[in-house]
Length: 174
Image (cartoon, rainbow, N blue to C red; front, side, top):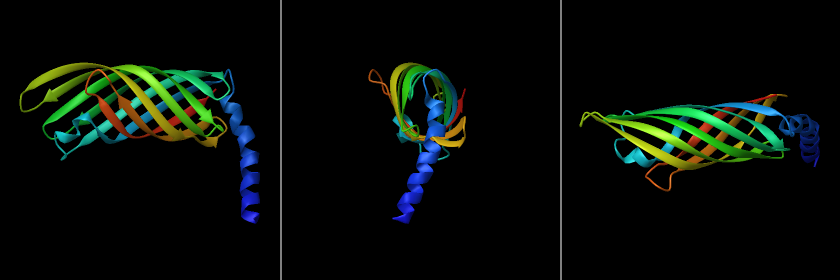
C-alpha cells in the first residue's frame, strides 16, 4: 500500500507540470531518428550487410489541449548487399497525448524513392502516397524537452510500400 501511495504522489506532482506543455497554443519541434526498421516491403531482397538510417523533422501547434497538428519532412537511407534506396518524405498529421505522456499519431504523406540495383546497374524511381501511424511515450527530462520512443507503421494502399519499426524522437516545446 505504501508503494502505491508513493507512486500516486509522484505522478500527481509531475503531471500538472508536464500537462502545461501540451496545452492549446503551445508549439512543438520534433526531430526523429528511425534507424531501427524492423521490417517492410524490401526485406526479402537480402538480409546480409543491412544498413538503415532515417531522420525526420516535424513541427506543429497544439490546436486543443493534448492535440498537436504537425507537418514534417524526412529522409531514409536503406542499403543492403545488392541494392540501396534513398527516399524523401513530406507529411502532415495529428498527434494526441493521453495523460500528456502516451501518444497516438496518424499522418498522411508523400514519399519519393530512388532505388538503385547494383546487379542491373539501373535506378528506379517510385512515388508513394502513404498513411502512417505511431504509438509512443513521452519521457519529459525537463519541463520543455522530452524523449519520445515509439513504434511506427507506414503503408501505401496504392503500391507496395509497407514499413514498420521503432523510432526515437525528441520533443522541444515552446
